[in-house]
Image (cartoon, rainbow, N blue to C red; front, top):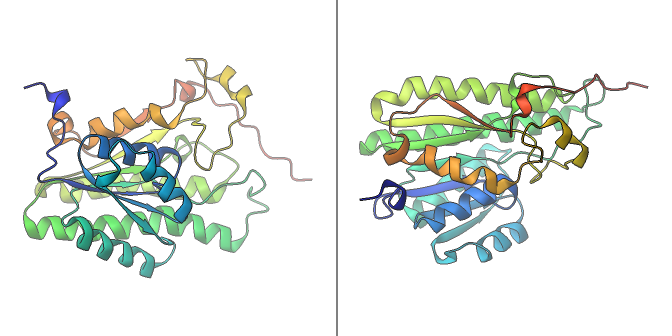
Length: 260
């Protein structure tokens, strides 16, 4: 049997993807249902979720959920909805993140913006992962989690709320991978570069800094996401951070912000 034709077991596996209404989360969620995996498409915006499911290759396998993951109540509502609609979640992708603005540098970012960025990225990522892991451990079922971090988890970005949230997620991946490996739960990170999708408004001029000569697209990440999520393809991979950036991390061009 060709592994690439049977990377998942739809009879036993189901997925939850946050940030599935646009960008990278949308591309991964659509790719999962394309592989026959029942998937919860979770997002803050109902219109985006509806459009993402409508455009999916197998929309009948997609389950919508709309809510705010900045609150614990929102996270718990998502978990309850996933349990009732698709049963045991075996594959979790955390791609949700508030939009970021170039104006929110260290001297300008507000308290609410700071808290919101950390709440959706780091706090929700931890809480959702831990509760899903509890269920998998109790059921003695393996799982595969994928958190979307950033090149700027290790490189300043002039957006301290964003960079520190992603840095926290990068370490969270390692902590959870080490804690849960004995239970067959793999936890990895996908590290995007300049991807023209989601909350990132890409300047075409960035392409000159990228060895492969172009900005990335959300669809550039989906195949690798599926490969890492699949136990059949990546069953011995955990605690890893897979960079998909066209070579952008080989150079860094960000100058300090203008404070005037």
